[in-house]
Amino acid sequence: MSMTLRTSLFALALAAAPAALAAQQTPAAPPAQPQAPAQTEMQQIQARLQQIQARALQDAALKAAQDSIGTEMTATMERVDPTYRAQAARAEALKAEVTAAQAAKDNAKLNQLAAEATQLQQGFASARQRAMQDAAMAARIRSFQERIVAKMAELEPETQTLLARLQELRAAAPAQQ
Image (cartoon, rainbow, N blue to C red; front, side):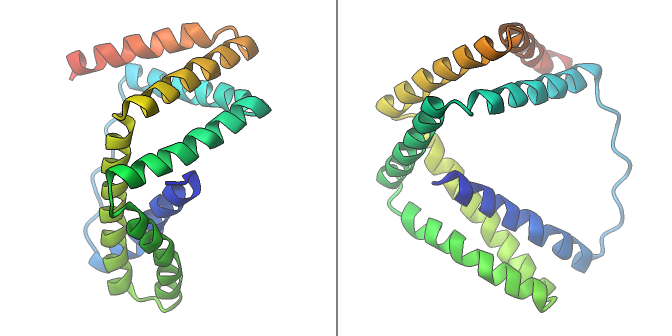
């Protein structure tokens, strides 16, 4: 599935959600609990790593490799899930339906479309997980990850330290809950 399709599908679910929630008129949720310092630190590290990764992906060779992996991932998803192509087409069609329902202020339709988008997203996630278990695909992804981390470290020497700290925090997270 293309990155645009995944992003669009997620955006569809998010776009429909406010109208769906307003239609249901549920009472406001209690204020969120303050985040634990470790969780805040994890988010800060992830944001920093995303910035470094975005800079690394400006490298033409890495961008081309990312595009190639995306194409291969789509082909693998189509192979492991025969319904993938039809679901992708349906996801694209949902965009116009959401726009029309929003223009018509049709909350019932938006609720229906949000539920369908969520269901499609779950199907895509399942197909993606199965595709990533394919040995050839997994090897390509690992190779790309190694290349991107190397480029990130070249651009920002702190990369390895950030990655190590993030791994420590993630490992400690289940013990803290």
